[in-house]
Length: 221
Image (tube, rainbow, N blue to C red; front, side, top):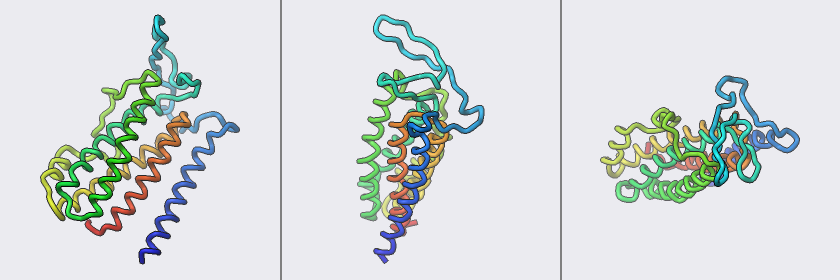
Protein backbone atom coordinates (compact mmCIF):
# COMPACT_ATOMS: atom_id res chain seq x y z
CA UNK A 1 0.00 0.00 0.00
CA UNK A 2 2.80 2.42 0.87
CA UNK A 3 4.51 1.68 -2.46
CA UNK A 4 1.28 2.38 -4.37
CA UNK A 5 0.79 5.70 -2.50
CA UNK A 6 4.40 6.69 -3.18
CA UNK A 7 4.01 5.85 -6.87
CA UNK A 8 0.75 7.84 -7.09
CA UNK A 9 2.37 10.79 -5.36
CA UNK A 10 5.35 10.71 -7.71
CA UNK A 11 3.15 10.44 -10.79
CA UNK A 12 0.92 13.31 -9.69
CA UNK A 13 3.90 15.49 -8.93
CA UNK A 14 5.39 14.78 -12.35
CA UNK A 15 2.10 15.76 -13.99
CA UNK A 16 2.08 19.02 -12.04
CA UNK A 17 5.72 19.65 -12.92
CA UNK A 18 4.98 19.07 -16.57
CA UNK A 19 1.96 21.37 -16.63
CA UNK A 20 3.74 24.21 -14.87
CA UNK A 21 6.93 23.61 -16.79
CA UNK A 22 5.08 23.98 -20.09
CA UNK A 23 3.69 27.30 -18.93
CA UNK A 24 7.12 28.63 -18.03
CA UNK A 25 8.63 27.21 -21.20
CA UNK A 26 6.20 29.34 -23.18
CA UNK A 27 8.16 32.34 -21.88
CA UNK A 28 11.50 31.22 -23.35
CA UNK A 29 13.85 33.34 -25.41
CA UNK A 30 11.98 32.18 -28.51
CA UNK A 31 8.80 33.79 -27.17
CA UNK A 32 9.87 36.65 -24.90
CA UNK A 33 6.40 38.16 -24.57
CA UNK A 34 4.75 37.36 -21.20
CA UNK A 35 1.82 34.95 -21.25
CA UNK A 36 -1.22 37.13 -20.74
CA UNK A 37 -4.96 36.61 -20.79
CA UNK A 38 -6.74 39.00 -23.18
CA UNK A 39 -8.76 40.79 -20.55
CA UNK A 40 -8.90 44.20 -18.94
CA UNK A 41 -7.31 42.81 -15.79
CA UNK A 42 -4.04 42.18 -17.66
CA UNK A 43 -3.83 45.71 -19.07
CA UNK A 44 -0.79 47.75 -18.01
CA UNK A 45 -1.17 49.73 -14.82
CA UNK A 46 0.53 53.00 -13.98
CA UNK A 47 3.29 52.47 -11.41
CA UNK A 48 5.83 54.70 -9.66
CA UNK A 49 9.49 53.85 -10.28
CA UNK A 50 11.90 55.24 -7.65
CA UNK A 51 14.76 57.29 -9.08
CA UNK A 52 18.45 56.89 -8.37
CA UNK A 53 19.95 58.89 -5.49
CA UNK A 54 19.33 62.56 -6.21
CA UNK A 55 16.84 61.79 -8.99
CA UNK A 56 13.06 62.10 -8.91
CA UNK A 57 10.70 59.15 -9.21
CA UNK A 58 8.96 58.56 -12.53
CA UNK A 59 5.59 57.13 -13.50
CA UNK A 60 5.32 54.54 -16.27
CA UNK A 61 3.25 51.57 -17.46
CA UNK A 62 3.75 48.36 -15.49
CA UNK A 63 4.65 46.40 -18.61
CA UNK A 64 7.62 48.72 -19.21
CA UNK A 65 9.12 48.36 -15.74
CA UNK A 66 12.44 46.59 -15.31
CA UNK A 67 14.31 45.37 -12.26
CA UNK A 68 17.80 46.74 -11.52
CA UNK A 69 19.27 43.77 -13.39
CA UNK A 70 17.23 44.63 -16.49
CA UNK A 71 14.67 41.82 -16.25
CA UNK A 72 11.05 42.81 -16.92
CA UNK A 73 8.20 42.47 -14.46
CA UNK A 74 4.67 43.81 -14.33
CA UNK A 75 1.80 44.64 -11.99
CA UNK A 76 0.67 40.99 -11.85
CA UNK A 77 4.09 39.97 -10.52
CA UNK A 78 4.02 42.68 -7.85
CA UNK A 79 0.49 41.76 -6.77
CA UNK A 80 1.41 38.08 -6.54
CA UNK A 81 4.45 38.78 -4.35
CA UNK A 82 2.54 41.12 -2.06
CA UNK A 83 -0.43 38.81 -1.63
CA UNK A 84 1.61 35.62 -1.26
CA UNK A 85 3.49 37.23 1.64
CA UNK A 86 0.17 37.69 3.46
CA UNK A 87 -1.01 34.23 2.37
CA UNK A 88 2.15 32.53 3.68
CA UNK A 89 1.98 34.58 6.89
CA UNK A 90 -1.40 33.08 7.75
CA UNK A 91 -0.09 29.58 7.04
CA UNK A 92 2.74 30.24 9.51
CA UNK A 93 0.26 31.37 12.17
CA UNK A 94 -1.64 28.09 11.81
CA UNK A 95 1.49 25.97 11.62
CA UNK A 96 2.90 27.56 14.79
CA UNK A 97 -0.13 26.29 16.71
CA UNK A 98 0.55 22.62 15.95
CA UNK A 99 3.43 21.74 18.30
CA UNK A 100 1.38 22.41 21.45
CA UNK A 101 -2.05 21.37 20.17
CA UNK A 102 -1.83 18.57 17.60
CA UNK A 103 -2.24 14.93 18.60
CA UNK A 104 -1.00 13.28 15.40
CA UNK A 105 2.72 13.24 14.75
CA UNK A 106 2.00 13.58 11.04
CA UNK A 107 0.21 16.88 11.60
CA UNK A 108 3.15 18.19 13.61
CA UNK A 109 5.56 17.07 10.89
CA UNK A 110 3.62 18.83 8.13
CA UNK A 111 3.34 21.99 10.24
CA UNK A 112 7.11 21.90 10.69
CA UNK A 113 7.63 21.58 6.93
CA UNK A 114 5.34 24.55 6.31
CA UNK A 115 7.25 26.69 8.80
CA UNK A 116 10.61 25.67 7.37
CA UNK A 117 9.58 26.40 3.77
CA UNK A 118 7.27 29.37 3.89
CA UNK A 119 9.23 31.52 6.33
CA UNK A 120 12.22 31.73 3.95
CA UNK A 121 9.88 32.17 0.97
CA UNK A 122 8.41 35.28 2.62
CA UNK A 123 11.93 36.68 2.98
CA UNK A 124 12.66 36.06 -0.71
CA UNK A 125 9.41 37.73 -1.77
CA UNK A 126 10.16 40.73 0.43
CA UNK A 127 13.60 41.03 -1.15
CA UNK A 128 12.10 40.72 -4.64
CA UNK A 129 9.76 43.63 -3.92
CA UNK A 130 12.45 45.72 -2.22
CA UNK A 131 14.85 45.34 -5.15
CA UNK A 132 12.15 46.79 -7.40
CA UNK A 133 11.21 49.64 -5.09
CA UNK A 134 7.78 48.13 -4.45
CA UNK A 135 5.97 48.14 -1.08
CA UNK A 136 5.46 44.91 0.83
CA UNK A 137 1.72 45.38 0.83
CA UNK A 138 -0.95 47.37 -0.96
CA UNK A 139 -3.90 48.81 1.04
CA UNK A 140 -6.08 48.19 -2.01
CA UNK A 141 -5.69 44.42 -1.59
CA UNK A 142 -8.36 42.68 0.45
CA UNK A 143 -6.42 39.78 1.92
CA UNK A 144 -9.56 38.17 3.29
CA UNK A 145 -10.77 37.48 -0.25
CA UNK A 146 -7.59 35.74 -1.41
CA UNK A 147 -8.10 32.10 -2.46
CA UNK A 148 -7.83 29.76 0.51
CA UNK A 149 -7.55 32.45 3.18
CA UNK A 150 -9.17 31.38 6.44
CA UNK A 151 -11.49 33.67 8.39
CA UNK A 152 -10.45 35.22 11.69
CA UNK A 153 -13.19 33.21 13.39
CA UNK A 154 -11.87 29.93 11.93
CA UNK A 155 -8.32 30.66 13.08
CA UNK A 156 -9.64 31.56 16.55
CA UNK A 157 -11.46 28.23 16.72
CA UNK A 158 -8.32 26.41 15.58
CA UNK A 159 -6.34 28.15 18.31
CA UNK A 160 -8.82 26.95 20.93
CA UNK A 161 -8.87 23.34 19.65
CA UNK A 162 -6.76 20.53 21.06
CA UNK A 163 -5.90 16.94 20.13
CA UNK A 164 -7.93 15.18 17.45
CA UNK A 165 -10.21 18.20 17.05
CA UNK A 166 -7.20 20.38 16.26
CA UNK A 167 -5.84 17.81 13.80
CA UNK A 168 -9.15 17.67 11.92
CA UNK A 169 -9.50 21.45 11.73
CA UNK A 170 -5.84 21.97 10.80
CA UNK A 171 -5.90 19.49 7.92
CA UNK A 172 -9.17 20.89 6.51
CA UNK A 173 -8.07 24.52 6.81
CA UNK A 174 -4.53 24.04 5.57
CA UNK A 175 -5.68 21.92 2.63
CA UNK A 176 -8.03 24.72 1.55
CA UNK A 177 -5.27 27.25 2.16
CA UNK A 178 -2.78 25.34 -0.01
CA UNK A 179 -5.33 24.94 -2.81
CA UNK A 180 -5.78 28.69 -2.72
CA UNK A 181 -2.04 29.14 -3.19
CA UNK A 182 -2.16 26.88 -6.26
CA UNK A 183 -4.89 29.12 -7.69
CA UNK A 184 -2.70 32.19 -7.09
CA UNK A 185 0.21 30.51 -8.88
CA UNK A 186 -1.95 29.69 -11.89
CA UNK A 187 -3.11 33.32 -12.01
CA UNK A 188 0.51 34.48 -11.98
CA UNK A 189 1.37 32.22 -14.92
CA UNK A 190 -1.46 33.78 -16.92
CA UNK A 191 -0.35 37.40 -16.52
CA UNK A 192 3.10 37.69 -14.90
CA UNK A 193 6.34 38.28 -16.78
CA UNK A 194 9.16 37.87 -14.24
CA UNK A 195 11.02 34.59 -14.85
CA UNK A 196 12.59 34.40 -11.38
CA UNK A 197 9.22 34.82 -9.68
CA UNK A 198 7.63 32.25 -11.99
CA UNK A 199 10.27 29.65 -11.10
CA UNK A 200 9.78 30.30 -7.40
CA UNK A 201 6.01 30.03 -7.83
CA UNK A 202 6.49 26.68 -9.61
CA UNK A 203 8.42 25.39 -6.61
CA UNK A 204 5.70 26.67 -4.28
CA UNK A 205 3.03 24.89 -6.29
CA UNK A 206 4.87 21.56 -6.31
CA UNK A 207 5.61 21.78 -2.58
CA UNK A 208 2.04 22.59 -1.62
CA UNK A 209 0.52 19.97 -3.91
CA UNK A 210 2.69 17.33 -2.21
CA UNK A 211 1.62 18.57 1.24
CA UNK A 212 -2.07 18.44 0.26
CA UNK A 213 -1.62 14.76 -0.62
CA UNK A 214 0.30 14.04 2.56
CA UNK A 215 -2.44 15.62 4.66
CA UNK A 216 -5.02 13.50 2.86
CA UNK A 217 -3.01 10.39 3.71
CA UNK A 218 -3.13 11.24 7.45
CA UNK A 219 -6.77 10.17 7.61
CA UNK A 220 -7.74 12.69 10.28
CA UNK A 221 -10.59 14.41 8.42
